[in-house]
Length: 124
Picture 1: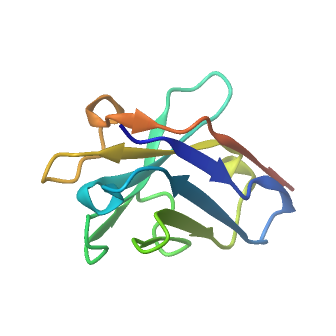
Picture 2: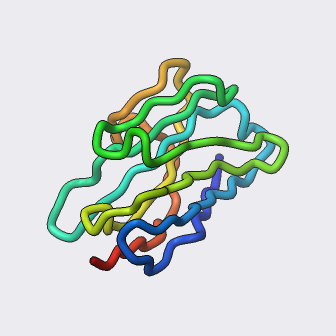
């Protein structure tokens, strides 16, 4: 069992930056690939970024590539999402998720555990 708690969301102007954190409980954090997803009002949850167990392999949605960076600190049981050059279309609730399969995935249904989400609002 893994419990995930996101933090770091807020209101920022377009072009600004935020860093989201996701703290995980349990001793097996390093056994999970981690992902960030987001959901805007009236839209489906969409993939943002994923990170392998070791942190050496990453994958990004085209919409955030070059602006967002996912990373993890297994000693702190924490995964991060650094978001730079934010745009109004990045406004959403951001969720972190953990999945135990060997292969990283961008599909929400294949993730085993989810946090409660943190709101990110980017003003124009």
